[in-house]
Image (tube, rainbow, N blue to C red; front, side, top):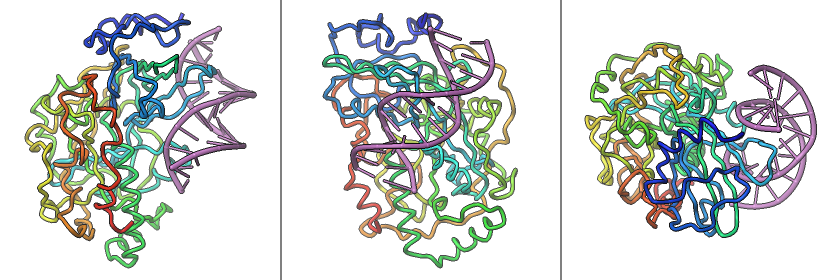
Length: 398
DNA sequence: AGCTGCGGGCCGC
DNA sequence: GCGGCCCGCAGCT
């Protein structure tokens, strides 16, 4: 009953199989395998039809963490926690920063917070923000299932994300903190004022939250695993022109239609480079600016040059269920438009660490061998590897 | 304020 | 019955 197409797909795509892990089980099975030969390292960006078995000691697993924005979904089964993907918040103008990065914000998990979030504007061009819904599971959001059984925590993912990766939870939190700090700091910031002016007419909440742009480099790190192999270099072509599209904050709709989703998924701008596979790396970073000179920053160890392909189709195919129905075109890219670099006071003590998305991948993330399917230890740090200290240093204002 | 988990309830298939 | 989703509540950070 619950097994069907999904399982079939899993047989072919379950990355877990690469680790010799048992993949014959299904989260709904009455009995799950206890003869686990290998416990997986926590996967921050699980994608496609994968299954993992974590140790019940794994903190991230215990918290059912995921760098994807997953919301709890009631499946009327208290034994199995189900979560569905909220997608990613993008700029309605599909703008790009000067360095070619895209805006991929993390959708707020809380419904109200998400609605509030969507009333805000693009941190980069001040355009409207749009929620790009996840339709990777037969047109529905990708779902993740968590089940605690004995000394293990079983995880199963159904569907392949058909959208870019949003910023991680840590990044989102850091951004919020920064924004708050900013607000407290420079209430009279001309730029903010300007934004407020722009927003007021729309009724949008003129918060500065939108200020620190979360720039996502369209790099691989932002691509779902299943996209990684479809990179195309044509991507770069997408970054041109200027802002077009909607007026600032015209209207933030909850959910970009699925058509757009597809468009995005095929947009070269979303591409990623095959060589990046740090799950931990996050595509979106709370930093300001479009201007690298403000944040020339050395700490970009994991950064890939934009050319490296930050663009490429993020996904060339539809989900397993194939929804080729979505085909709209989406205005592609423009160069950073509108707003000048943020007035961020570069954190004392160092160049803006968050700066140019180029580096942004998750700051303190140690390089990983692969997208995270390595099952090797070390991932247990998972979402935590970006320690708070780091952020505090980055955001001293807090 | 926002995240997370839980559970009631509705709806479509 | 199943799956998706909305909503409210409660605990936690």
